[in-house]
Length: 230
Image 1: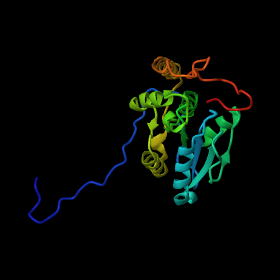
Image 2 (image 1 turned 45 degrees about the vertical axis):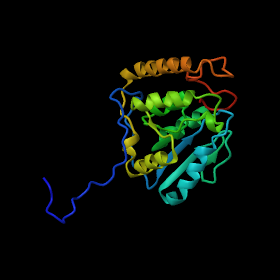
Image 3 (image 1 turned 60 degrees about the vertical axis):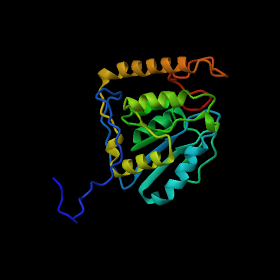
């Protein structure tokens, strides 16, 4: 129905795109959300030797405007320490599990093991994949892997600062948008599906230089040299 002449039509407010989690997911519990006076954020860049300055810089730009509303833990690895509270180079496996379980939101690089762990703890992880064009990795397997998972709704994929800020603001407004309810029966099937995706991507980047001796997509179940799984 058209409006009367000279009377502007009302327009709906812009909405942030929402990633919908799939029905079958990994963990065995339903995450509580919105607890406490501040939202707890875990940022994990993994243990790769390449710096991830883009992600750290985006966090530094975003944090001052929301500092009273968030409680940060930033595992920055070999990247420079961010000018934010809660910065730590590495978390041992047990500490990483504890921090991930307590977090309201998980932001991480595109490491398959980190993504799987986040989902096991009931999170829909906000994923910023490393990009070799910026010297953040040796090849583009994180980009390929994260894009496939993003298309399947298994992660909230953010490849730009604006996309990351939009996801963080949505998470602060409603942390429940980035949680998944799970059951034990589907955990093994989902893990197998993600590993199959890993095998596909492994084939796509097989010709890349400096290939590793072990497949990059296999989750690790133990701590190596005091550093957490990637």
